[in-house]
Length: 155
Image 1 (spheres, rainbow, N blue to C red):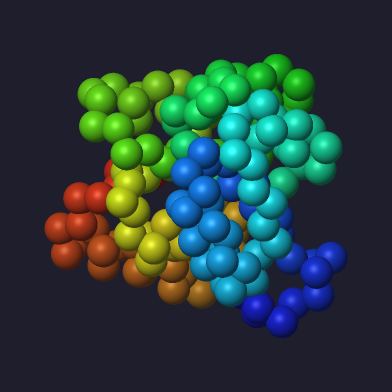
Image 2: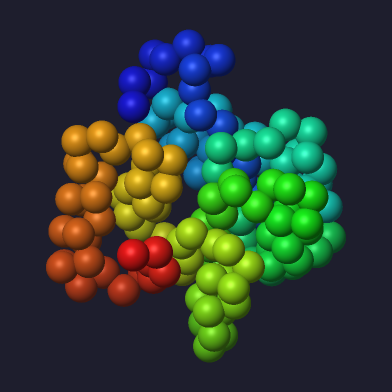
């Protein structure tokens, strides 16, 4: 993606995370990659932001004040925004979270601390911003290196 792309041509990502440092770091990284980014610090604000101006993709923490990420994903489906890809991120090691994420329509599941290259490659793939397969190749290489930080639940 060309970071010099005009703003109206740039894809928009909504980052919903109550950890301001994570949200800020992710926002900076995504903007540097050429995406427009909107952040929200809790589930209610994330839902409101998505309803106000539907993003092209959502990166959302699972455990949020104002409503857990899974509930927000269900509400988005209910109001007709279920087509928006959602990548869940969590620091929780609780068993079964990836399955719950899949059940609410999540396209990917990344454990914190996340590998920035893997997350960017996952985002590019989910938004079809990888016409030459570069990001898919990066993801494949990361998996072969034994990176256990993230689980991709999409085939």
